[in-house]
Length: 144
Length: 121
Ligand SMILES: Nc1ncnc2c1ncn2[C@@H]1O[C@H](COP(=O)(O)OP(=O)(O)OP(=O)(O)O)[C@@H](O)[C@H]1O
Ligand SMILES: [Mg+2]
Image 1 (tube, rainbow over the protein chains, first blue to last red):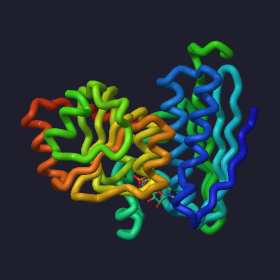
Image 2 (spheres, each protein chain N blue to C red):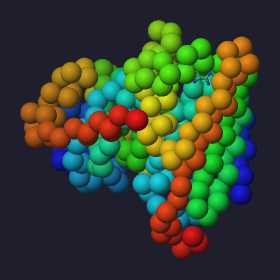
Image 3 (spheres, chains in turn red, purple):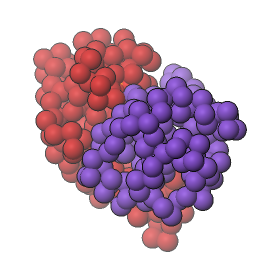
Image 4 (cartoon, each protein chain N blue to C red):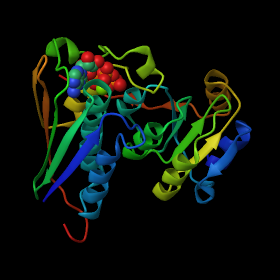
């Protein structure tokens, strides 16, 4: 099953909704809370980065029995120095974004910590594609 | 410490989440930057924040944080309250600043913070 979302870059009232919906879907499928949280956190950070840094994009979450794969793609400015961006505390978020609660520089580290596989394909001027895989080990629900 | 006790200690108004009043919380997290909250591991957490926007509610929800206290007299919008209510969360508002709100809870015995998740390698 693949869930598709258009993530607008100019409407904060919607930002984060895609991740919330994926979490609900996984919960209904009986995925255990710890794994669910890892998917939710990793996807949310990537979703918010698309909104904050790249003017929005698209997200696709593919749910299989043994893993969840989320691909988030934008046509934003790309990431200049990925190694630097992966460091805890590194952020280019302007003051205006800090007032909205972004810019701790913890998003990419949080994605890394919560995924079993993380790939960031980025090119300055072209955009960024983030692929997150979280393996599912222990289904608990009735329809799992 | 229950949500009811927290409300009393912070002279806080309960905006939504009556049914959580007797829920017991073990730890607190005070943050205005939401990725800091997401770098945090602990169950039974109350989030104190000065950030009043839908992302505060969504971050809490994704982290399974059921109780959020808005500090410095800030109040959530109707839409935020509706979203929190449908998520089964409790929202409180206090006039105290972040520093004083955290201090009062600490003094009253809520001493545990979450642990910082280990560094991503
Ligand atoms: N999709 C993206 N497009 C362009 N730049 C990005 C993108 N994602 C991340 N970046 C760059 O990488 C930096 C680090 O990202 P990270 O998510 O770790 O921190 P942040 O978004 O600045 O703050 P936080 O996530 O803690 O709110 C960003 O400040 C930005 O410069
Ligand atoms: Mg980020």
